[in-house]
Length: 158
Image 1 (tube, rainbow, N blue to C red):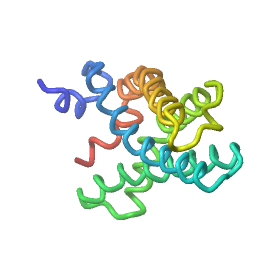
Image 2: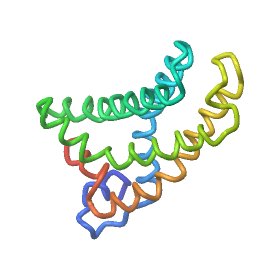
Image 3: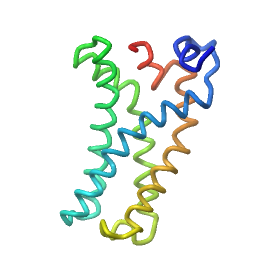
């Protein structure tokens, strides 16, 4: 049985593997990272205050995270409204946890929020924060998928 097969039978009986959780987290991280990086780049390049940069990054992370999920489920035939509901159910907790961890790490790295785009600290702290967010969020996604929640909702529409 493949991960995808067992994922479709998530009714609480099929085992949820770490591989399934990592794939769901990576999918979520992709959308989050696009928004997070774009927000940090725009905020830094335009001289936004650190709080404004973080808010912009979080908003864009949710937008891109939801959009990535919606793109796939709209292809399966769902309307925009139905796809949005699936994305909310599938990704909200995962994105929220990633953003809390990601931004906490960036703020905790001395000088990271003041680093400019041409500084290794800007890019290094951003990459590190995303890696930490992935590690922290994967077990949460595994727990959610094992209960038919989170990313498990999406697989009913593939």
